[in-house]
Length: 130
Ligand code: UDP
Ligand code: MG
Image (cartoon, rainbow, N blue to C red; front, top):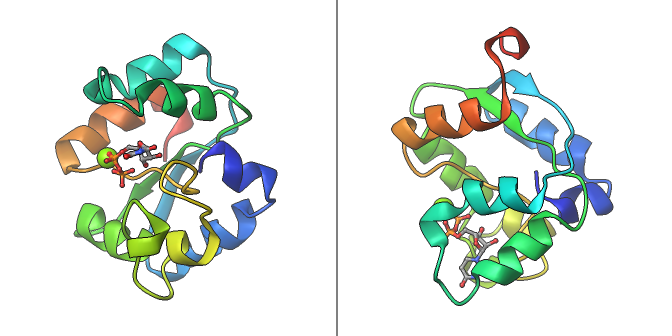
């Protein structure tokens, strides 16, 4: 959950939707990312025109990283959150209902199981996971 989600006090509502969709919460915490952490997390987007703004946004307040488990998790989570830009997101999705724009879009989502494992280990020690 990104800083806009925390600022809007939507953590509970967003997490409820995720749990109702059948995901198990394997890990959860609240953190203030440093610039270096945000740059590292989004390193794949380095050089893109939106990169600096993205890092600034992700360090503008606390984030709530959540490690999730489910069969078909990546695809099902994408369906639940909707398209990156809320204008393009399907009705009833988290981004359609809560996001202001393509940059401030409430939640992150891993794009593959492989990256999901890398991203979970970016935020969580083994002792913090179910
Ligand atoms: N982003 C942005 N402008 C863009 C594309 C992406 O600000 O034109 C931000 C947005 O917060 C997005 C994140 O960069 O969630 C990562 O982009 P990606 O294309 O991976 O979207 P996602 O996987 O989050 O849907
Ligand atoms: Mg992505």
